[in-house]
Image 1: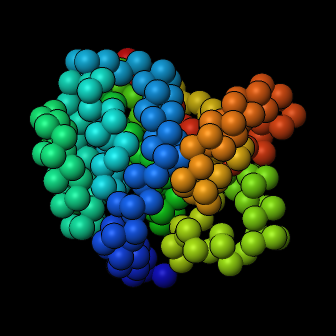
Image 2: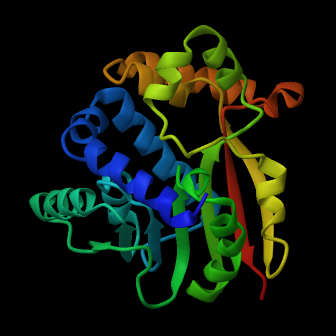
Image 3: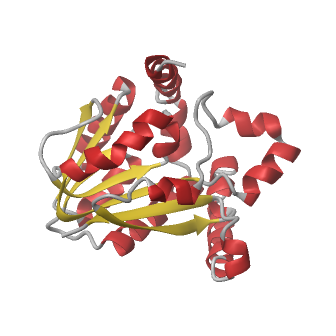
Length: 249
């Protein structure tokens, strides 16, 4: 299938998503707690600080980026959805956040200390995913780091969800997105990067999506995830995996 057809379907889906549902859903307590955890995790794994210039790919309505903004020098979010960029820009202005800006498209000029992609890679067609590391290397400053978070093809939660509630699983997926194989994705960063995989969670992210108003439930699930991730035999069946890829000197 042509890459342009996939992109058109993805854009249509997200324009609808960002025209009301996402704004309400992402503001719920469990989802906000999840986003705060993502920001803390990103900062811990990449070492970004108040001097860092950060680019966010597929930023959506900027809810994660606006939480990150107080901790970095500048953050630029890009997205193909006009509705998302309008909302993100309006939220930044309303909050008085001046070091975050949001641009329509898939790129922003300049070089960055860090590039972030939250639940973004699994939307890319195979050819675009394979070409991404070379593009990232051109955009990152020397010693810069790329961070991504995406669903794992080995996820236990996905296997259970497809068996028990297949219709509900499809509700939160576009027709073209898919789960990714962690090691195969990491292997794409073989040239010019030192890359590694970390597992992010088991049940806390899916729980936040299914029960966005249940903040206490998310916090309990996150604590359980932190314990489960210490068990090596279970770790590979986690729900979402991270790639941390730093450019070689």
